Length: 314
Image (cartoon, rainbow, N blue to C red; front, top):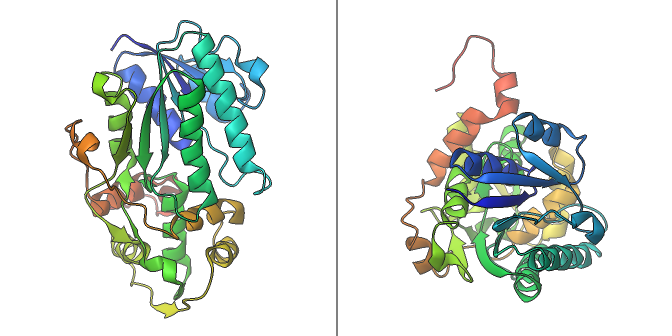
């Protein structure tokens, strides 16, 4: 792979892994970071990545980020940040600024990771609208849509784990029965990296997911099995809203309510692959949810710190 690639969100859960995976495949990677002084940015710089300091909400700071770049990954979203009434406007403004920079500086294509489903979730609608903005104002767009991305540092995985570990019983609102299609972070990266070489992915929407379609309640039960603790009984409370659920999760787990809210809103309607044909063209065999959880638990830094020294977990 000889392409020159710009990765935004490179200090995040998916972006950092993507930058390293692309570099391992031989790509020349430049990372867009909001600050060079953060731990994540310093780690990237120590590993030899070229950094461009800029913020999509400050269009002038993006100047030069795309110089000499063939393709750019857009992995920025405002989930849980700032006033909920303003995040959609911020996401739109940021996407416009980035798309216009990409077009002006000759980037040939943008690859964007958004979410499955829309329904009643403002955050999922905003992420879809981000794709429309990138397509309208920027170069050719490859638009990936994924549900829950399972990995040791994903907020969705951490929320699952905290709920199972910390509560002897759970309230059971109606959204626990809605279906979602989780995908492991390594499989997500495989699609993102492969899209660079797969010309047919340019200009398309590609829905991706693992082989299992599950309710959130089923995922809680499977998490309990993987952690080796009893499944938590659930107390039916069908009328509790996603908003109230997010406040409750913020109270009983370390997950901030501002982050929990979009996660739970996204579960208020199904988030499953409805058109699998584009995904099949990649020839990537995705792993099941149980194996995805096992890998996430094995790599979870918080669990590693909690295990007694000298004891290995199988």
